Image (cartoon, rainbow, N blue to C red; front, side):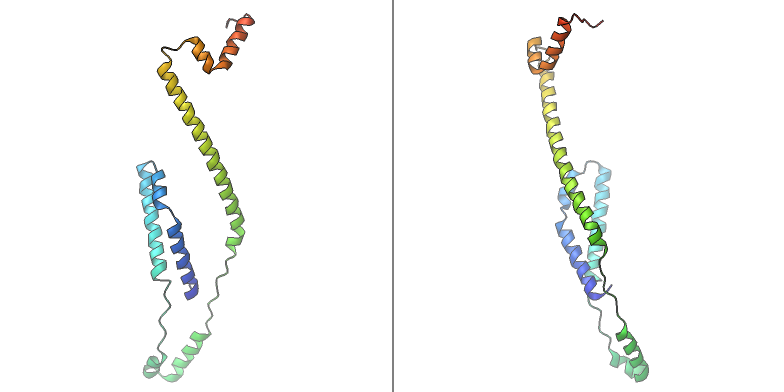
Length: 169
């Protein structure tokens, strides 16, 4: 990895690490196995982030060519120096991100829609649970009129059956 490319990767990893809400995600986990796997993921992420910060973010030490000239000889060291300086490390050009960014953005929109849908469904189910619990408490003392007030569609169905002289057999 080139010096500037490595620094860029280290900076991106640092920003990504700060943007992740590890505690918020940990609260969403239910099983012990999921918590264990999540801890392993976080530890691996921190290890990679640490390596990016230490190993790849530093510039390499400059070569002391004079030191080698004294011990090996000027001609050979000059040849190596010339070869070393002629090496060009190609700069990384990201061609993947532009290709997948629109897909990722579309998935984020879809995710937000699914989240909203899920929240609405969760709210509806919580109301339904509350109604069932209330019904459970009152069912032993509830009259048919009280029940039909809460469920007018059943009252209509029963009235239609009686009107049509349909008694279930």
